Image (tube, rainbow, N blue to C red; front, side, top):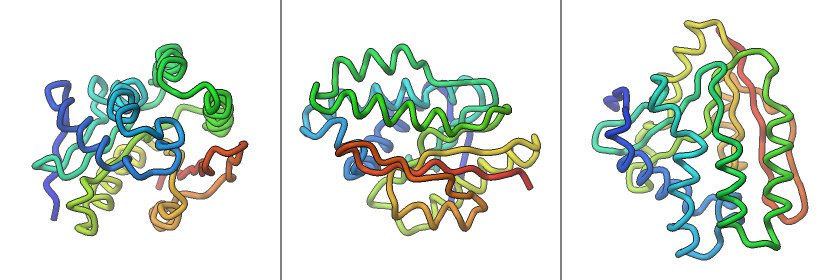
Length: 192
């Protein structure tokens, strides 16, 4: 079984590195940053802006040896939207920018109105996939949601992951399809 520990800011390089590897073939991420140099330049900053506050609020979990990581934002903690907008303006090609902003807006419209735990990012090192690291990280993170009696929300960026999240009690809310941007799948889980 995977050994999971709480991560802090000193774990940033390992967590950002594993996320960068894990998302390198995710259609939505590569839609934003299709060129490899563009992806490697901007995606690490995207990780930090989208999920980095998890380090400061006890929501960042890492598998020993950087085999995987999850970045949970607790109730009432949100990504820095202004900084994310600035990153998208700088890093996403102009032809794709309006669709990226439209998808992010649609994702936000499906977040619960009540305080909830949000999972911006979970990733497993591709060399360690298939070793139940994702299940271990999800189970670990969902314990806090259940302990607090709060809903959990995520936006899956890959259709293959939807059944995995459904097995954990998440319900698919809708499919967001805008222009040429790959589909995104908002999902919510009620506390148990």
